Amino acid sequence: MSSTLLRFVLPVLLGLLAGAALGYYGSCTSGTCPLTSTWWRGAIYGGVLGALFAWGNRSI
Image (cartoon, rainbow, N blue to C red; front, side, top):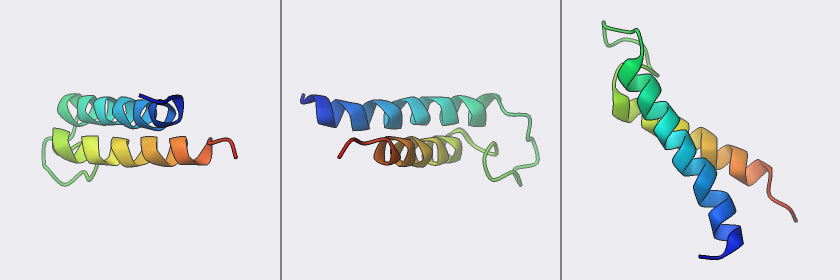
């Protein structure tokens, strides 16, 4: 795996894991909280934020 691809995939995976953990262990029990209502929704938000972080910090 090239270092450029690794520098993009690693923040996305970390965001996925952090978002899934926040969604799973979050304190929203009613299901109306957009980030913490389910683990998979938190993972999607975390993955998108990780991708934005990785894309914003790329070296040109």
